Amino acid sequence: MNPLTTFLTALDALNSNKLRSGLTLLGIIIGVSAVITLMAIGRGAQESITSRIESLGTNLLFIRSGATNQSGFSGAQGSAATLTLEDSLALIDPILAPSLASVAPEVQIRSQLVYERENTNTQLIGITPEYLPVRSYELESGQPFTTPQVDAAAQVIILGPDLVEDLFGLRDPIGQTIKVSERAFEVIGVMKSKGSGGSGNQDNRAYIPITTAYYRLGAQRTAQGELSVQTINVQVVDDDSADAAVIEISNILRLRHRITDEDDFTITNMQEMIETLQETTETFVVFLGAIASISLLVGGIGIMNIMLVSVTERTREIGIRKAMGAKRRDILSQFLVEAVLLSLTGGMLGVGIGLGMTEVLDGVQLGSATLLTSFSTNIALLAMAVSGGIGLFFGIYPAMQAAKMHPIEALRHE
Image (tube, rainbow, N blue to C red; front, side, top):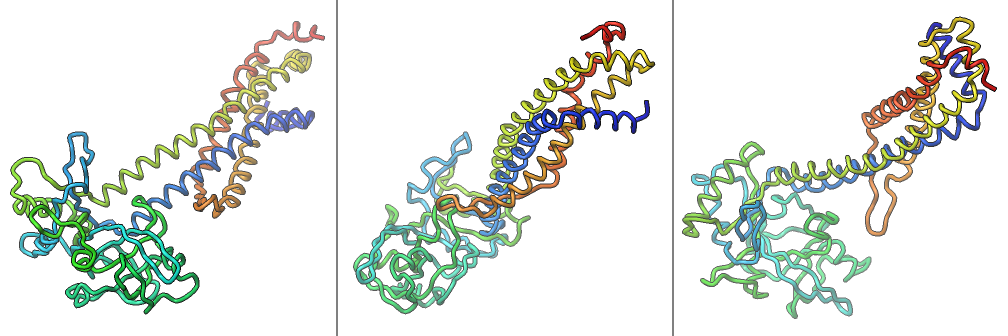
């Protein structure tokens, strides 16, 4: 029997019982659409997180207080005041550190912000003029800090968009005066929204000159009286210079801190963070796909069950065909084609529904988070291939049962 005849015969057999075929398709449809939808959600989350981190710049290094233990995790990172403002200034050396393009220290303190009857508690970040370009931060309005303002420890402040909404509502904050720890500060800028990241909500922060944090608000100092910083942000010349920059930074800080054994600082490479995050989220995406694949397995079992019922119902038909000269491989191929046709049809419908669900869910607001999806053609093709393979796998046993029937016994079947 030629392939076209086999296909048409299988199609006619499935069409003769539409309801049963439709219910069998449903299991595969649900399985494929679930795989595509969950994988799209996982991919969307992965791309969203990665893009947010990459927006900070891939050629960044972060130096923080605290050593890295043998397991690779930081111990008491940022708790000991081992980094100072003088350390950051020492890194700006084209001879000892040629791989460094820019250095931006920061100090963090908590403070109360008050404007008229509104007030909020937030994190103040003491920064230098280099901080915004190094971290790829932009202003929505106003002006950044200038070097004279930093030198004079000026009482000026840049607010995050969430703080502007809390304190000013719809009013323009530029030029207004607010109180920070009972001191009057002039608002000179508003940050462009960055959203939530690995270090929390970045829109709920305020920025002041680093010298103002020390001399006006009493930021932390070291035991020797030096001006301590929590983090030193370093921008390297290019991505390829990151490893050389780590060595240069380590040499300078070890000399300044007179270190002979374990470092009292930790250097984090942004590119390594991104790669680690991608590996972690990839595992998460695969896990989601594996969970959704369980429904595909259930759909395959449903195909086997229906095909076994079909073989039993068509026993006399099988006997007649064998008596008329049909070979064992003809019977085998017919039932295999029916099973694969069922699974592939369900797979195609599942891909369509999965694509529709991906479009519907993209941008849906879940509380304070926005659900993002990313449809992948490769995942759709893989789901189709898996659904076809499931039909083939679960259709083999019923097809073999039909093919090995003896024609005389089959004809006697009632």
